[in-house]
Amino acid sequence: MRIDASATAITWLPFAALDRIPLVPLELAVAHYDEPPPETVPDIDQLRRQDAFREANELRAWIEVDGGEVVDYGQTGRSLIGDGPELESQQVFFPAVEFPVIQPEPEVGDGWVRFTQTVGGRIGLPAHRPVVGRPYFHVGAVSAWTTLELLIHADGTSETRLVAASPFPRHSLYAADRRLVDVFGADEFELGDGTPWGDEGTPAFAAAVESELERRLATSILRDGAKLVRRRVARGETLVEQGEPGRDLFVLLDGVFDVEIDGEVVAQVGSGAILGERAVLGDGRRTATLRAVRSSRVAVIGSDAISRPDLAEISASHARPAPERS
Image 1 (cartoon, rainbow, N blue to C red):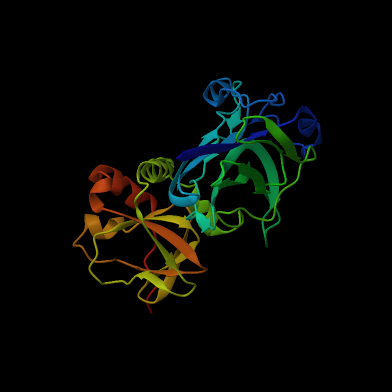
Image 2 (image 1 turned 90 degrees about the horizontal axis):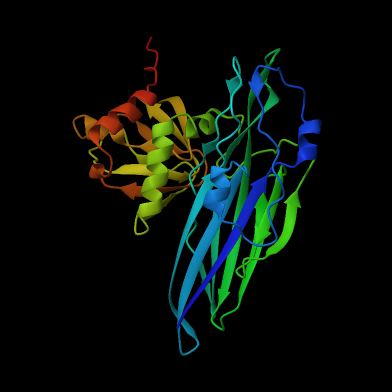
């Protein structure tokens, strides 16, 4: 017997929040407020076309039960980001940016399976951030995210939880029966300390959202590649070594890597980055060492999964300076 269940979280910007955000210049286009989502799960695609939310986390999963035992299971899911406000003349727009979906391996217990999914992105709402060591502020879009947990039991029941989320704005949680469970998050504008993809103040986080092509390809590959090999790389461990042969590409699902050339760190890469393209475009040897700054996870993809023109564009976006030599 197959048992299907789902969990949904919709992130939206309440009217009161716009009165409480820090003052921004008139030239900046600010996301409009959203009406609270309804009591039952709406048509999310239609809602997105209406730009009626900031982001949505949709997790679907199933288990196969035989004789009271779980014999198989699987999950799908998606992330949807609102399009943002319409521009007036002479305005600067902060586009909505979707981060890669984070889907850990399901946890299997005695008569149950627990599924987890994290989605998020930049929601087009500008905010001031102090720049460490500099006498000015950086103005950038606010990030919002949710982590859903869906627990399916062999007896056909299921449990839905919002296990983590950005402190701002509001998040409406819907259970498997498609009814609203609760609303979380703040009306008051608040910047969080970090995200599941890294600290927003680090170069690695900026790298994770730098290339639109990279984001689009990584998301497409992860959605279509349910059977991708996934590897965990411990802190200090290398994913690839400079000079060694290699043709695989990697999508960095979670974590941060130092990029080392001739023993010197020349850059950092964060979640969402596609790695290994230079060996594929070149002579088949790694041009840099990738070393995990913290425990990280990657998905391994074949070199033919991305066209060579797209790989060349990704490689150009990864341009990094050569280390200085005495």
